[in-house]
Structure formats: C-alpha cells, structure tokens
Amino acid sequence: GGGGGKGLPALVQKAISMCDRDLQPDLLQSVVLAGGTTMLPGFSERLKHELVRISAPGTSFNVVPDNKGSERGYNSQRKHAAWIGGSMFASLDTFRHVMVTKQEWEDCDESIIHRRGV
Image 1 (tube, rainbow, N blue to C red):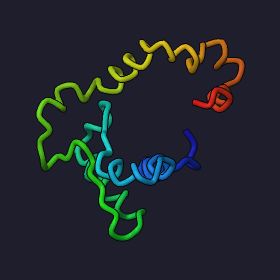
Image 2: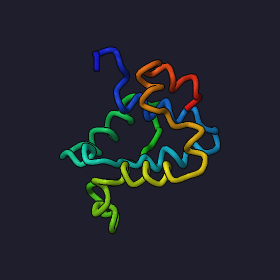
Image 3: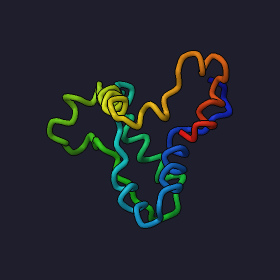
Image 4: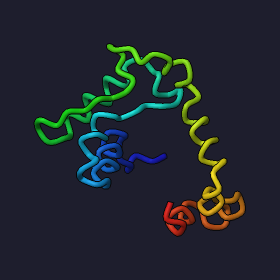
C-alpha cells in the first residue's frame, strides 16, 4: 500500500541492474510475466513502453509474452505460473532455510525478510 513505492518498471530495471553485467543483456531480452494480473489487456505493452521510457537510449527489452507474438503453450499455464513456481521452490530442501513462519512474520513483520537475506 501507500504511494511511496517504486513502480513495476523501476523494480524490473533495478533487479536486472543488480545482476552480473554479463547476464544483463540476456535478462533484458527475457522479462517474463507470470500470474493472472499480468493478463490484463495492455499489461505487457505498457510494461515494455515504460521500461524503454526509463532506460538509457538504445536499451531494448523483450517482455514475454509479447501479445503480438505467440508463445505456444505459455498462456495455458500463465494464470497459475507464479503458484506453480512457488510450489516448486517450496519443495526444494533449501526452502526451509529461507521460509518465514506465520509466528515470525507476526513478531517481526517484513524486517524478518531482510534478516534472512531473502
């Protein structure tokens, strides 16, 4: 909530900029949208437009899915992709090292995330 947060394009740009410089061009060409909200009409076009607007001149982005193209089979699972990915992550042995219990969240709020280094 609140109005002081960064928008999605700025968060995408920041996340990519925090990665190894050698990987950044590939990441810029592979911004993947997942979850039901990203299926809103015009969402991917708007994100791409805003990324271009806030980035250095000449920077190109590829937002997947691109509604002008067609990623075969992608849209059939897109609505649930975030849940499927979360389920896969939760099944890994390493998940128990980063998970936050309900009690930890109630005791610490979001500061527990920063303490865990997640």
